[in-house]
Amino acid sequence: MAGCEWDDETKEVTGFYQAGYDGEDFIVFDLKTLTWNASKPQAVIIEHKWNSNIIGSIFIKNMLINICPQWLKKYLDYGKNSLMRTDLPSVSLLQKTPSSPVSCHATGFYPHRAEMFWRKDGEELHEDVEHGEILPNHDGSFQMSVDLKLSSVTPEDWRRYECVFHLSGVKDDIVTKLDKAVIRTNWVSLSEFPAGPVIGGVVGLLLLLAVCITGVFIRRRKNNASDPSSFEISEVKDAALN
Image (cartoon, rainbow, N blue to C red; front, side, top):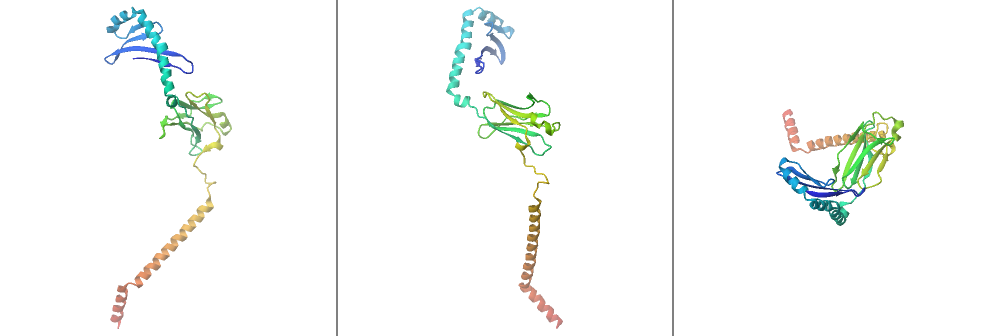
């Protein structure tokens, strides 16, 4: 197995060259010392043989440090529209109830090499924080969330907290301040709930139910009046009385 890694930010290039046998490491090339190191006693003979070939070691170094990165950059340029694509997400603060944790949710980002965290006064928080997994969306993008428990956060300290989203390859982070005004929730307190429409709806429902019951009662009486068997029974009773 041979290859190289190129850091597009630091421009650092590293290479590797190693061989295995029967599913286990066998011998590895050290790029710094230009020597082979045996991983198994059976590879010691090959280690001595290959280390005696200085020209071969220099050739491998040139391949890993110069040729391989050129190929890598070329292939990245061919597929940069997809391989180096970066899409920033939309970030929202979500909360079920006032006592629930505040969830910082990011969706629509690409690639999946991203991280998100809460911080206070510029310092990353590790306590009272729960990180969610990075999940795929149906369009090929990704989503993730990180929750902050508010049990130890006083209302005066809210402005000291912020959610930070970082996407690999993008210089600027997305920072969202902890603010009640921007939190999205479906929860409504009883004091805010519109009681008037609810009472009116209940009264209307009761009136409608009463009308329906009255209609059924009248219909049953009409059905009984139009039933021939009822006249026959009445006639029989009259004859018996006479």
